[in-house]
Length: 266
Image (cartoon, rainbow, N blue to C red; front, side, top):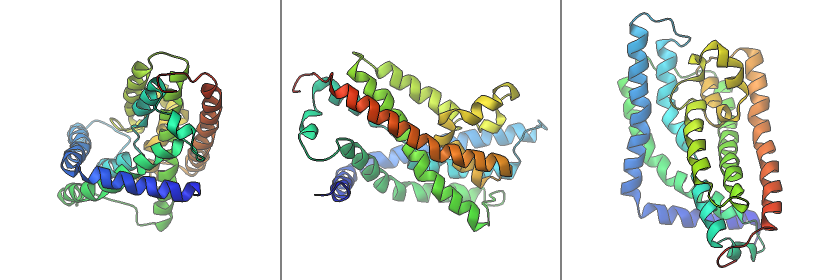
């Protein structure tokens, strides 16, 4: 069986498993919408007080309405599971199969997102209707094309960043603290809480090059028309370069980590 066919079957299997908990996932998606909605209301209130901000009201609305969808499609939760599989020896069955072990985690990621998206879109549509007078998505098809190109690259960046940290479990007894720190720092630096354009000037250069920007913020920046032509091309290079770089790092840590792999069941 080819890796593509195996990935398809793993994804389908995870879709069926996730459907059993669709009620719980609906609650998760409601939370996924409420967080950006609260942030949007806060920033709209701030802008109405006459504070000079780099985003207009329409840009704020567009950013936060689309944030829920982009955040869900690029999110990852694999790190904690991979750490436990390394610690408990649950990698062993996959190592005995003629397929990359990472496929099971990719299948889980894709399968859950296939179920989450139909649950999320109606909730986002309600928010979009409420803010319809200020919602200004781009009418240029090229912008949407770039957005659709950036989304899978952002998802790959987030995924392999998560996996890379988790693979430190081959050398460390407990990396759960590092994973929690990554989630916290990533939420802040990816633009989930605050658009990166609102960062202080002292952090501007750093915010443009750090990898978390390319897990969420950059695709949204493309749609909010917040980039100059130069920033757009440099950002696209980084958006496509980070997945390749992190994939190479994953391969290196995976191959070296397996030489040390020893756990219950291994």
